[in-house]
Amino acid sequence: MTVTREAVEDFLFHEAALLDAWDLDGWMALLTEDARYLIPPNDVPDGDPDTTLFIIADDIHRIRGRVKRLKSRDAHAEFPPSRTRRLITNVRILERGENDVTVAANFSVHRFRRGGKGGEYVGRYIYRLRIAEDGFRIAERRAILDAEELGGLGAVSFIL
Amino acid sequence: MTTNPYIIDDPAGHDFRLNRETLVDPAVLTAEREQVFDQCWIYAGHESEVPNLGDFVTRDVAGRPVILTRDDGGDVRLLLNTCRHRGARVCRERDGNTKRFYCFYHGWSYGNDGSLVAVPGDDAYPDGFDRSKLGLIEAPRFENYRGFWFASFNRTVADLDTYLAGAKEYIDLVVDQSADGNMEIVSGIQEYDIAANWKLLVENSFDDYHLHSTHSTWLEYMKDSGVDIKVPKGLLLPKRGIGRDLGNGHAVIDNINFRGRPVATWISIYGEEAKPAVEAAKAELVARLGEDRAERVANTNRNLFVFPNLMINDGSSVTIRTFWPQAADRMQVTAWALGPVGESAIMRKVRLDSFLTFYGPGGLATPDDVEALEQVQAGLTSTVKEVPWSVMTRGIAKDGEQLNSDELHLRTFWRRWNTLMTGQTAAAEAAE
Image (tube, rainbow over all chains, first blue to last red; front, side):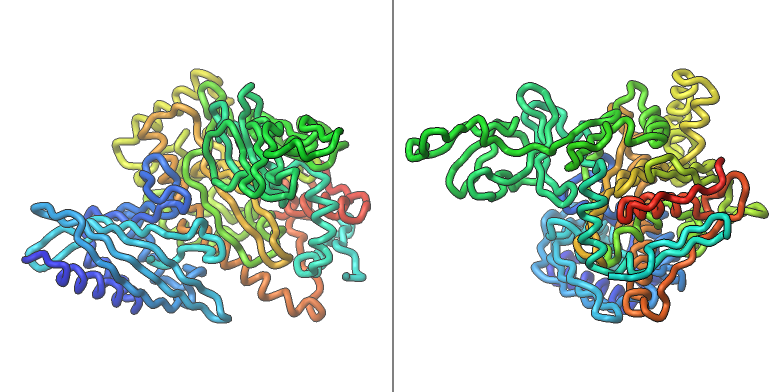
């Protein structure tokens, strides 16, 4: 397949639509078998999860566990599930390898809960996408928050 | 302000009730700031956060902006971050290393020991203007126990050692994980708010009664990872644990480990490559401490509450957590990971990974605690007239030990809190 910014954008917009629709099985199908999902702490946005305490540093095993949890009625922080709306912009290809491509994008994710709760999660993604015959797979997605602290956002209980 | 007592405490009559106004009323919070937080020792930071001369971190402690610093002479200090001239903060960075704290407003500057070293145009000040008396003000009391630094804004408070009472034994168990007795705060701070009264997080942080219902998805994840989560008859958790009153309002849940612990028990989610390192860590403990003490350090876990707002959760990892009320219905939480200085790269990786399975704003458990506390606050705030009391009597009729899923440790907190707020003597529950 040809790697263009437009193809990358289509893929990221598709991922965002799946997550906003809480189609978590559909989302899992976009991941590689060794995928990682990372959210660094607000004070060390460029940290390494092996030496810095992250907010989320999931390997594929914990991603599967997280999704299983989120699909149950007992993930209390996400029951009923939050409504989310993801705006993905400023998509750039940073590095192109033979089998993968590193991509940056900005995000603004709005989260809504009953009673006026929720918040706006703003930051940037760094993706490592593996290039497969039939399209991209996510090998790593790192969501880097811009806020100085999580503060009033409280938790990152959904897939950001 | 409520006309009912804050607590109804009658151990002989097997009654303990909590007045819900204590979680709602802004006047209670105003009184707490003076009668609780300004009377006690408050956790300020760990010595490892300022390892080198000139290192500093800024934060709020007991509601005051402070600079935790190691001065050029090597002393750790806690300076109030407010210029003696007009009051601006003299340091706005999160952390760093410096010789000087500089107030940009009029240019006064201070040494890293807080002394005032330069005042622009000081010839305009009258005789008697004494720079040596205009250094940054320090916390009136500032002492440490095994690297944990505490401040008190009560000049006459008992020394920290006396204050910590039975909590010291449990801090020792945490620090004994380190071969040379040195622990350190790991890089990466979790800072998040909870829309709930701060005292609800005291309860939640060592309330094992809620584990099976609030955290069933975490237990399920543990089960899927090969951990035995079967609950024996008579318990609510897979292994036995007790609640203990440690004096001065401190309390602990002291549990036999049932899940993975980086210092003791390998579980499959740590990865095969980590198995030898976990076994070596346990062997080091046995060699250094002997079988019994090593077993105590490694294969029991504890959630230690140091009154009024420090939790040290030594479970699947070590979490230091403190919290501060911004309003009666809102708190700021700060959490760090603690680990032995110089532990191997693989052990550090396992420690951090194990932390995140349960803890923190993205963990598989903490977000549900946040949700629970916010649901409590939302539930009781506007119903307090119709539903004035909460029930807190689990275990109160027992003669001997109380379990981690009983509520002795919660009542211990509330009794000390009530004594500070009202001057009433706390009722004694059956001795252990």
